[in-house]
Structure formats: structure tokens, C-alpha cells
Length: 324
Length: 266
Image 1 (cartoon, rainbow over the protein chains, first blue to last red):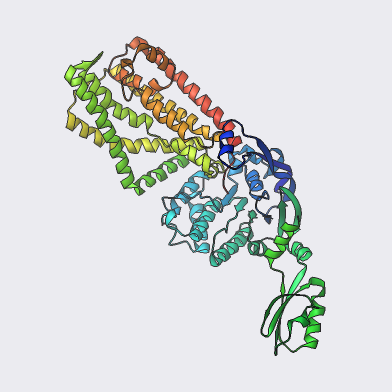
Image 2: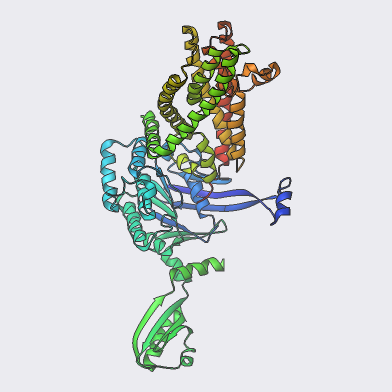
């Protein structure tokens, strides 16, 4: 029995059209044509308990709108959503007590006071007992190394520190379902790594069902086995991330270092030359031919080193988005 | 248990005030000087003439000194935050929690009033010390009724403030609406600047069909023993109707608005 069940979800927005310029602005005072934008278009999927799923897609695809409908923040225009046996848009307290939402660009921490005060507020809101509160806070403080941070004013924290505290605020009540909307946006490599590890840990330790949106494909690759690819509001892939890459990663990159110099023109027959140096060359070769090309070059030239790389994740995904 | 979350909200709000001590100090200074200007003006006018119209000098002094207290109790509010929260999408963080956003703002309002009241009491003593006004005190029944009307005025102004704030669900930039209905009309028509019974009768009659006199003017009239007890029942009924109407409109707007809410931004 899936914990999340979405059927034919559609969400539309009315937007006003305005031509550029001052004249158009004056006209818009008494006449504003509007059009309907379908941000989410007939989406259907199920998610089981304990899954860690990513929504990916280009900007404006409808990922965040979908997440907002699932959480109950937005009312669907049509279709149905059932999460934990509740209709999210009813916003019943029992439902809201079992979900958490971290938005990468919005704070739930009170800005002017330390995060620990927000945690105390959440303790009261979610009826967390003193012993559970202490136990959970200690767990998160240790896991995320927050000991010296939670008593500092939120506005004085770095983005990475703030995001860690946002996670704690969203998880103190141990929600069954956690929505993460671009949780690692703007974070540096180290902070990103730590949060990624944290997301995987809470999914494993606490069995929290997690749905996240991200433009960082390394985040997605490292944390999620399953992805839903959304574009123009429609779902066009629901399955394993590695399968998605395998199907769409059509090229390999072969990086050769040679003992001596060779003219570039000799290598054009093997594949596309993407980079070259005094004694090195990088070839872009179709996936199904890379081994044959590698062995041909190894047999014919004096190779000191060879690296075979997959297409960069971002390039594969960008290609998927572009091909739609 | 349910009350604990709102108590914690009040505590956190108080901590915010302690963070911005200087800002709060200058806010109180601004309020104090506004009062000094009004009071000095009316003091000058009424002391030279021994009173104005139906007001003796003492009743005018009492009107404005007491008005300082009434203003703090009734009009200090955090509901001005709501429009901004709707517009920038910060309301989302409230909607997604098992708490009532309206009660959240009420908790913030309550602590705002209490905090302002504490400081106002020192300012009040300063005013008494500086001006030594001859004040009028109510008889026991008027005092009780005054307290009741202040409570009703506070509640109805809260709902009125919600109505103005919830307009932001439909009008993206509602600052001017809030300023007009929440500041200008309230200041002009509640009797804060001029006692309403000094205005022409036809204006008073029109204003009696608006909520404004009930926020400020009528409680003070009761304190001044200037309303006969026979009018108390009809006045009480007016307040109950006002509370019911403002509550109903604000509830209706909230129910419709939260469906329309688009949670702008990420």
C-alpha cells in the first residue's frame, strides 16, 4: 500500500499578460488579458513508505508546484492526492503533524533569535515530550555538528549552518514524510556533502519517506535510487536513476596521454576531439564503440595513460531536458 | 497542551523585542511624542477657554490621557505582518504546521500589547508628573463597563485588522489599502485626533454605522461618565454585532484566501 498516491493531479495558475513599455502599462490599468498556465498536468504516481525519491526537471517544469500540492500548501485544480490516508489540502492537524517541509529559499527559523528558540516552539507545536525532545536534539546536534551554532542568532549563521538548523526544525517531530525543495541550493561542496549524508542517514535510521527536488544531479545520484522526471508539468519518466542515465548517456570520454606527439588529424576517424594538449587528447565516442576505439588506439599508438569517463551527469540530464 | 504553543509563540515574540531594544525605544519615543503633541494642543485650547463645547478642561485632559492607554490596548498590533507574509510566501511556513495562523497572530498581538503596556505605564507616570492633569474618574459601574468595552474593542479591532490584511490574498500590493483603512481612517474616525461629538451631527450619525467609534471613542465616553446607563445595553449590543460581523468577514476571507494563496517564491 503506497504511502503517497497521486492521481491525475493538475494545477493551473492564472497569469496576466502585459506587453512591454509604458503605453502597455497604462492600458493594463483598465484591460489586463490573462491566460491560464498549467504548471502540473495530469500527474500520477505512487510512493511507498521509506522511499527516497527525487523530482527533477528543467526550471518551470512543475516540480515545486507538485511538492506544494503534496504538502497541502496549494490546492489542486483537479485530481486527487492521498498521503498517509489524508487529503493534504484539507490541512488537518493530524496530517500536518506527520509531515515536514524544508524549502531551500524560505526560512522557518525565526530570523532574529537563535535556532534553539524555534526548536522549542516546534516542541510545543508538535507536542514533543521533554525526553524525546532532548534525545532527538542531541541526535541531530551530534550528527550535524551544531553544538556551537544553535544558540547563535539565525541571521548571523552562514547559509550552510542555517540549512542544517532548518533540517533539525523540520525533523524534530519525526515526520513520516519529508518534503525537501532545493535543500542544498547555494551550499558549498563540503556543506552539500554533509547534508547529502544526513538525508541518507535519516532515511535509513528513521525510515522517513523523503521527496526532494534538486538541480544538483550529484545530490540526486548520491541519495536517490528513483527519480521522477517532470517537464512542462508532465511526468515523462518514473524509475531508476541509473537506468535513466544508462539509456541517455550515449557517449563516453576517452582521455589518452601519449609518450610522444601525434598529429590530431589521425584521431578524427575514432571520434570527436573535444580537447587536446601537447601529448594528450580527449575523444568523445559513442557508448557502444568506446572499447573498440580504446583498444585500436592502444594497439596503434604509444599510450602512457588512459582514462575512460562517463558523460557528466549534468550533460546527460541537460540532453534529456533539451530533447523534450 | 494546545495553549502551550501559543505561549511559546508569545515568548519568542518577546525575545525578538529584546533583540531590537534600540528600535523599540525609538518606537515608544515616537508614540510618546505623538501623544505630547495632541495633548499639548488640546491642553492649550481648553485651558484658555475652560473647556470646549460639552467638554470641561478636565474631561478633555482625561480624554487624551486615557486615550493613550486605550490606544496601546486596542491598536497596538502585529497583524500588519500578515500582508507581508502573504505577499512574500512566508505564510507557507505557518500553514504547514498544526497550528492556527490566526491564533498565531493573536498570540503575537497579545504579547505586543502587554509589552507596550509595560512601557506605557512608565510614560503614563511621566505624563502625570509633567502635566499634572486634573483627571476624571468613572463611577464603579462605568469602570466595569469601560473594561468590558475595551475588551470588546480589542477583539473587534483584531478582526478588523485581519480583514484589511487578508485583502493581500486578492490584491498583490495592498500597502496603500492597509494605510488607508488601517491608519488614516482609524486615526481620523475613531476619535483619536478629535472627540467625535465635536464633529457635526451628520458626520457622527454616519460614523455610528462604521466600526471606528467603537474602537476608541465610546469606551472613553463611558469612562468620562458621559453616557447614561440606559444606553449601555444598546451599546453592548452594537459591540456584539461588531465582533460578530468582523469575525464573520475575517473568517470568510481566510477560508477563501487560503485556497487562493499561491505561496510565491520557492
